[in-house]
Length: 389
Image (cartoon, rainbow, N blue to C red; front, top):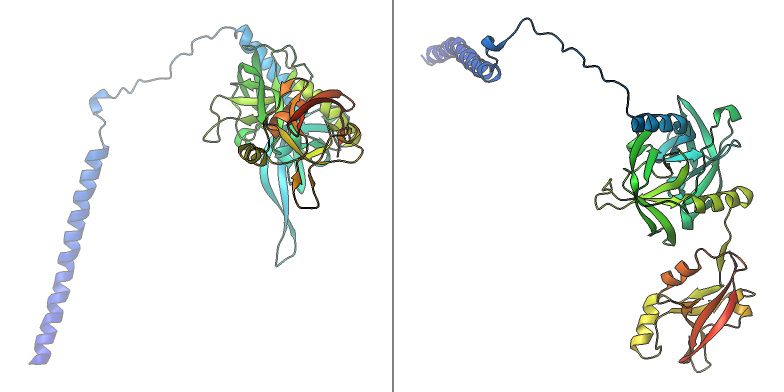
């Protein structure tokens, strides 16, 4: 009896299987109909079987400004290169060396000797640098020299002179706000991109990767994005007037404010880098206490004024020859604070950055008048600037 009842349950299960399948099929059909009705919104009465492509309206000649921009780009693009910062890594299993791109930027051909100029921050910490000339032509570059304080670097590639088209050099001393400018670069890795704009401001100041001030910087609204760094900013004659180096943007992308190192500075620094691999930076030859120390000493009444406080003096430097006073400790442990620099050539100094700014454009062997405060007394010293190591 029990065996018979179990067999009946099995038969009922077998008979229910086709019913279930039928229900599933109906549900799928209903879903398909609903989807079809939702998607099929085309009304047959609106269709026109005779529709054809529109006739093209004759354009006429390009505007003269357009022709000028096209010509400028065609002439300058062959001077612009795509730079890749490469790190080397060894595979733990095969021990093969793998080249890993760490970032990209832009550069431009300086001369027919294979020198390429870019930003220092583009090639910073690179173990190899690849320079792409476009059209599948690329070469590894060697670092000739750099001026990190000005965010400039010079590379050297070994390619035939026939493959080099040096950029035309202009000047930045006579630029005017409102002048048209053009930027060529590789934003986000997109090769040979042209953006246009105007000079929005002159005489700006930004900080380099070493946190040193770069003065006289050009501000432009020509779109500059990551990857444009190191590329040329050109005037309407296609001449180099600046090297695109930074943007001001909370998001890290273009926000209408870009900065370029002026070409007059570039034209002064690059030949030095090619000749010696470095730039002689002029200074007075001192090390300084942090600004926070000066502020605390003022609060404590030790110092009357703000300024740059001398910690130590480099032997045989201009400061040593002028007999400036370093900070010393007396045998009883009390501090004898060094000279406080409060002005350079009559211009007030309240922080280390201001002192660096006032000395930034001076040359080796220039003479400056420092206003010094020491033991609450002020005096003026003439100091000869020397090359800093």
